[in-house]
Length: 387
Image (cartoon, rainbow, N blue to C red; front, side, top):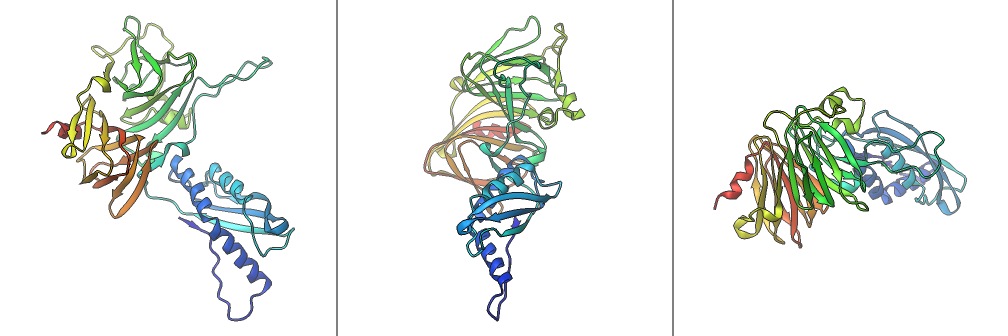
């Protein structure tokens, strides 16, 4: 919620100050969509992107804003939010204000308790910074990989699993590492890749539509086999933890949960191995009376991964998952999620998080909708097998 409106009560002809206030109110009302969009983008990264800020506008000819700058902002206000508002303000027109005038606009962005849907495009890229030795000529190389934190405790109150989008550049890799506490599912959305394990382990090749489960503590390398294309993965951690290092590389818990391995002789836990499954080789189980299908790819105690498809217009009745949270990455299609009395639209390349025991339902739009579905812990996917 954003507070910015100026309320006026006038029994007599308005003063100059009142006319200016009214002009500003009309401007803010006219551009409210831009302001809410800025806040929506900030919330996609973190729910606590709230607080107060002040923007100074310099009005030019015809009321067009000539310059805008941030005068002050609370420490809780995300820099991306203040930058977005400032950039948007330069496109505004403040009718009724003399050219050359300077006006001050205070804003209050109220914190949010939760959110269930975010757009992938609104989430910033993170990851190692690319660079070159000091004094080296030529263009700066791109980073070997980037990460978007799609769902975690910070932006969606996701406490049982976290979800990230990992993009590995052409002929690049994520160096050998392991997650001591967390199992990981890697679903390849685009490209060609392989997973390399410790010495003696057979490489596992992945094509789009394949998923790999990496047990906790298993050393592995994620390698893009494409020389000119990016490999894009969904990466789910159960329990959450490794994703913390993407937000803050100095976070001690994140560093402990994402352990970079430099010893070439490191071994895997006894009996542990990578499990690989393909959507193309998994049975399409009918759901919703034949109005959808589910392909169960991974069935582990800690998490389950399925590829679900819904026909246009189908309604998913209100239900809940006892003890298990649900994450959905919308590959294609659109619809509306309902939680309580509220509705939340979603489109392709959105992520949905539904906490454990939270009643919810959905209505699919006019096109077929496909999603990668993750339950943590596993269990709710077993209902797909019931005829």
